[in-house]
Image 1: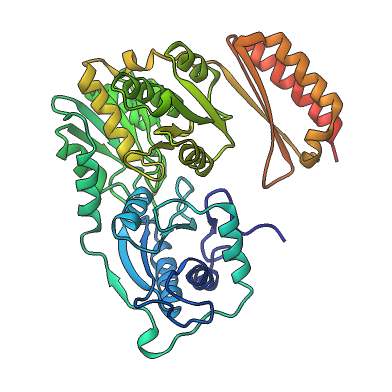
Image 2 (image 1 turned 180 degrees about the vertical axis):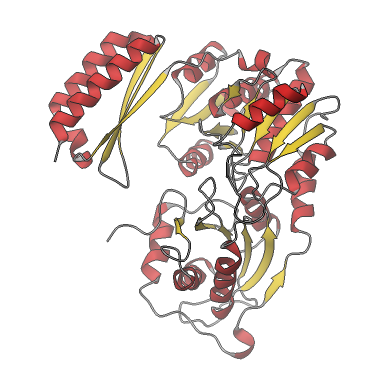
Length: 453
């Protein structure tokens, strides 16, 4: 049986894969594993019930799924504080700020509206490691705890959740954003209320798109996976910058005044150099994933900044940040973690600090982004192959060595097996687009021949 938890919680088509019953049982299982102050048989081990913060994005299925989660938690003796529609990073902040035992976010992030998901956060506001998710999954096979009478949990509204988060965001900024015109794309998602309030509160002039959620339009032609409308709006309005979130606002991508996309790698480069200049980049080191562009590593080398690479996934970035006590890391997709202010990727926080760097330096986004040259990156997905045997094939390994020699130190080859399907991803970067394309497709041919099933 495949693992229930994916790279970012449990996710699937609402009412088909992610059902009311599964949502309820996941909450009951999480109460056993994460609910401190309670023994496995349901008896209280301390003077209080466990406390959980619950939130969701605005997709329509979130209403009944979050209700199922709340019921599962309360029936297992957990007091639930329901924050309603707020971003994922807001939930993470509130779990820590409220000293809750854990948090539950109902969201499918950048996925289309029919999908939904459930992800859990530990007591400090961090995502769960794989082994804790495995314990929750194992607990699904056990009968739920069933406290009685006064031992059952209560469900309360977290009335000032958004205000707490907003105060936190504005308190992190090194400078105000007065005089800067920002086009803000909230993906018709969880950021549609608090992100505009944050940018306005910091002094920016705002033009809004994708900030009118109706439950079914989340990520529909807007947000960080659909930047075309944002790019047009920035140019049409003569704005200084465009900022895009995804459905739950844990990502931030940007667009410069000419409509050019500035991705997560470029944003990390800008913030890393800024923090280093101000003596705030811990150990002068940045954490990124193996999928970050080669141009990021070269730019960091030129700026005297070391890099640590992790597997793909913001949870692995955070693990490296915590292990090495570092302050900045993220992904090309726009998950950026600033550990001085957040425990997970925060798209609003990232966007605010990016615009604040423009205010601090007086430079345009294009000028700031010029610190990094983005190398052409070709990705070829080789489908229907024995992906689990990738690391055991000497012919493929030899082909990779030859390809890397051909590219030299100004190119890179990466072969990655999918964690969920019979597929191998072939990624090649080079200073020349045609060369990258040629090598990527050549390697894909070798992989297909060697691993065909």
